[in-house]
Length: 552
Image 1 (cartoon, rainbow, N blue to C red):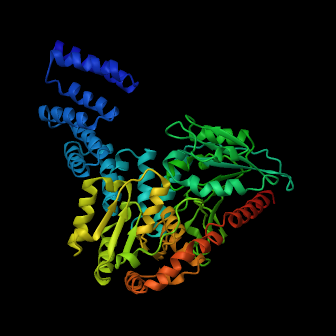
Image 2: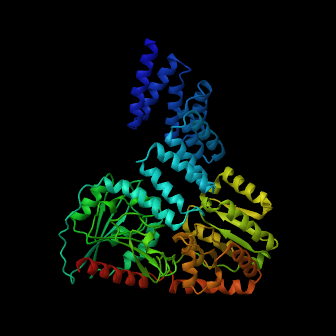
Image 3: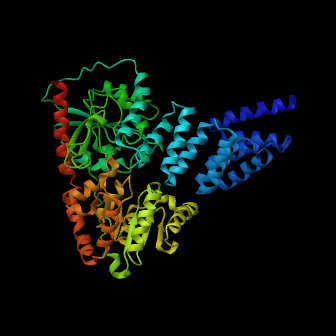
């Protein structure tokens, strides 16, 4: 017992070193333990975790599997090997071990959370929501779990706007209860002075918000507005664009919590905080601490923020029709002529001829996240492929580098009556030019539902590829429809799956019209949905009006 106790103590010391990032020292200690006890499962498992941190996935899998063979009833071993399998694109084995971990320890919140993420990635949205709810029940204050849970709600066909509002408010109330004091702002209320606008870009290396934001920041009227940027990256690098240089000031908020970020903005007398990436709830926390007298959610969002401290939400008349129920938002809605705008890829990628002319068959396509390809989407797209003779479906996403994910999708389409040879897969491409060039292989883009495209719809249209979409009721069910309406392509925006299928068939049989549309679409898009100058002018008018509302 004394030797065992000593070894456990030594392993605990090594684990502390490992958590501090001192991997070499920790590894040396684990190896010494194994010289004394070659079958010490914890030491073997933790060596596997060091290999995982060093991204040696094969070695990590071998070591953790060895630990599992010695002691198969340790839930942590199964949870951690599932993480390794996920990182090495082996989702089927990851799911197997996550389920074993849950069976061994049903109270393990992290296992339920991981299962939710895996189910979400496979398009099983409602099952993923159940897993996230179970995880939250065990760890109700975990903001990472809340973020993925709230995000997933927008992908569910069973979740109404009212459901999404109610659950976002539930999350927000937990946060709001922690905030004891309200700030007393001393900002100068002179209506004629230059306004100081804050933009918040948390973890800007993990999302595409900068592509929406760059043209706006560049075009802001610097006589009327002083621009202050606040943000951080998870890789400690600056954005690849020159967006930071466009701000009048930039503050790196790495290591700051939400309260500290809000305090920093208040101390710097931000008049209006524009938050351009509230799509994940963990990014919204700063709004709850009231960083500025006026706070606005905009650009890259999927729902209400749920926070009483968010004053406005930027939308448009299509995404949020005039007759929509505004009580399902904590914010007042500001409707511009466009929900957002997007960066133009000047100098990249000419639009090629319609692929169908040379191929002699239609290629439908989607470059959306494959989590949007739920069973209902598979069935609908399979019906389209059956109706359009010899047609193909091209799917592109980084997750399709995984054989497991390709097999999962191929199996789903096979059950719907579509053979594997009619599905074309494209995985990750490192350059923007190579990525955009994929659209030169696609005749018609199919928008998934209920969560449609955002960036990919803009990029398809830039490359001359029209987007067929179903307009539902939630924000991300209507964004692609908004783009197509602005382009005066209303026939591409449908109300039902039946209309979606019949329109796909009709459009696919009119090669001449598709070819003409393809060659004219970019110019039309540049004048409308990519018209950042128009969008920025409208946004600035809205900012000035919001400030007047605050003063008076």
